[in-house]
Image (cartoon, rainbow, N blue to C red; front, top):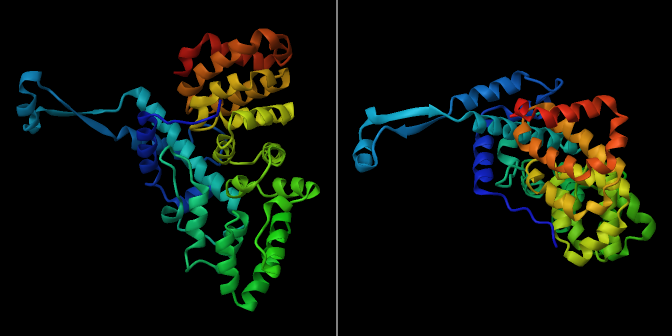
Length: 371
């Protein structure tokens, strides 16, 4: 088995509409202020709902026999709002995409300085509504009007060796000194500087066993850039373990790495990862849009779900997904299925968390409240 994500046409359509709605906002403001308050109907959410409510679809008052003729008469055309179910779905997806932008900015604010980053033109997106961080990094790197030092740091973080060498050659001595003062003192940066000074290409097999933890732990942003270059199952397992341990790796980046593994290598990863990291793994597959394959991932790693992992996943769904009440229609069935798979085994443990157990029971018994 391998873990693969195949989005439906409906999901792609909803993501495209949601992005269009999101791009009616000022992204330079949104990246800093989106949903800053506690979960609830904030100003952003209310405005999103208003924009969605203004979407109307044409419908025709005509019988089948005179459909063509009817379409030519404007008086026969009626416009109706989107169904409530679709409006709720779009609201949740717009919010997920807005959080994507804010989280991208939070992950890169140590690189991008200033106020205006031209995100409207620089952000690259997958069709299913997730920022393509590699493409976005390239957009910054290849913008000749952008600060060359920031472009160089982008290239180092994302392990674009050809780009970082080109930028290093084009930098003046003063620019190099200024950039070196700004460089984070991480293992990744030091290895790149050694490679540049020696003019020897980076050898990914030479990362020593002692260096790996520091390298992987401090370099989660560029994981999609360097993971395919790693050799050996042990090194790849260490990489994924460190990414999960950090708790901040982007969920698509993690999926991208795991999806490269064939059945044998995926089995090795399953066996070498500590139980404690499986909770983070499952959380990643609960985020948009991977919730549609969450239960497949659960089935594959079922033997690794301990009471601690079960409690962590239940808590995450109830407080981070259902708690927002933006995408409850997606998560209520996921929660019910997950609960039914493991609750008999771990029910006594979760009953000790009285408030959490009461909330879980309420969700299971009153699912119509969340539709």
